Each structure stands twice: as structure tokens, then as C-alpha cells.
Image (cartoon, rainbow, N blue to C red):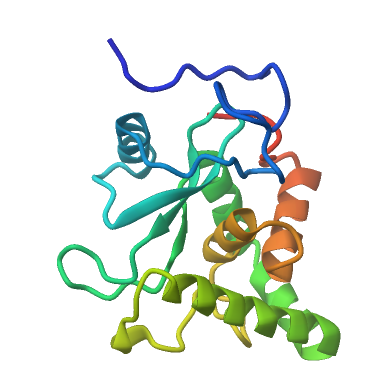
Length: 194
């Protein structure tokens, strides 16, 4: 018998995982506790045993993990700057497709031309560092966030993970990526595609 939560394509209430209060923002729930079912789902999603998982930073509407919050130092001692690791297969695939289509080049050009966007992206970098510092300090990655922040876009997966974990308005490039995924029907945190 499987211990993974049953997932449906049409939950009773959008944004609500089974047995949980409604999420405050898309992709987020109030329960970040890691359960055995979460670890099994993560193993399935990643194709390996998850490492350094501290909490579930965002969930699918069905309750399965979408983003994990990871310790800045893995159990083997390796520094790990990616605090918010995107795990949902459809979201990962969507980001990979957008990267293959060179969307990052467009975002980099926008950062170079739009001072307001660049300033918001720099604030996202500071937010990322502050949230990671809550989990401890790791000298080797001090000042290093993820995804190319604060000046370049290098990994849409990391930026979307941060946006989903932190909520709308924190990571502008992550927010833009989510908008593109939704517009193109590639992934939407309001609908289960597990």
C-alpha cells in the first residue's frame, strides 16, 4: 500500500492540499513539515534520495512537494547554495524548455535595460541570502545566492523555486517565469499535474 497522498486533477478548493487550510498564495501551503510521504514523493520526483531537506517550501494543490528548502551544507559536508530547489516534474520540465528556448537571454537584456527590474532582482538576491542565513552560515557560499542573482539570469529553476517559496513580488524573474509557464499552458501551481 502506498503512503503517498492520492492526487487528483481537480481538488475540492483550488490552492488547498488535502487536510490543510487554503494556501495564502499559489504554490504555498501553511504546512512546511516534511513527512515520510513527502520524502517518498521527492525520491520519485528527483529519481534519487533527497539530500539536506529542511522543509517543504511550496506544495502542489494535491499536497505533494513543489519546492524543497535545503540546508546550506549537505549531510556530506558540501556547501549547497540552492536553498529553494524546484522538484515538481512539470515545473522543472517547463523551466528546462524555457531555458532551451533562450528565455534567459531575454531576461538578461531586460535587466540591462530596466533599472527598476534590476533593482527588484537585486532585492530578491538579498532576500534569498537572508532566508538562507536563517538556516546557518556557510563561509564557502557567503554572498552567493542562486540562479545568477543579483545581476544575471542563469537558472530559471532556482528563480522559480524562490518565487514560489517566497510568494509573489519577491523575485521578479521567478514571477515572470511563472507567468510564461501559465500563459503557455506548461505548468500552473493552481492545477495539479502530478
